Length: 199
Image (cartoon, rainbow, N blue to C red):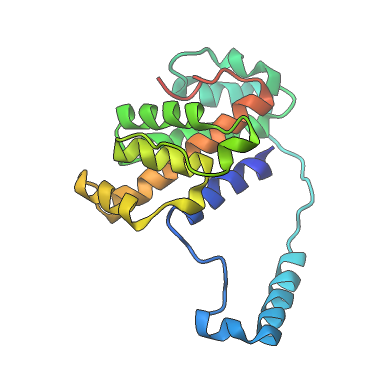
């Protein structure tokens, strides 16, 4: 669950901001043998990573008491379905703490979450072709970031600049969209209340 959430989070930031997935500079990509060598080296490095599960020292009661002050609309018992996996509760706690450090105001964060919930694809046609975007630049950014983040355009970024966001503000918006997408999938997979994180 955490791995799925992290991939949704990272991929959306990378796609919204057009971070190049290739490690090689573009002029060198035409050399197929060099590309294959780069993939092999990356694979060997990743293969050395230790992905083994480890015991988690924090129990449900501790995890519940740590997250309780951060929950505004719910009692921490809303997370009881995660009692056997307190590590998930800690991950949610860290996400809430990150939300509180964002430069994006709470009203905008809530608007992003509402837009993501409404834009979440429910059928194949939702991610194919073109769909009307909301006129508001922040909501348009959240909509595209949910449906097909790789389609974010320079014009959308420029619209955010005209709305008063600088580079850091746009990065924080991308993080907020990614976080909302991660949470939208998390609460569905775990059966948690959708409004657990945002007013």
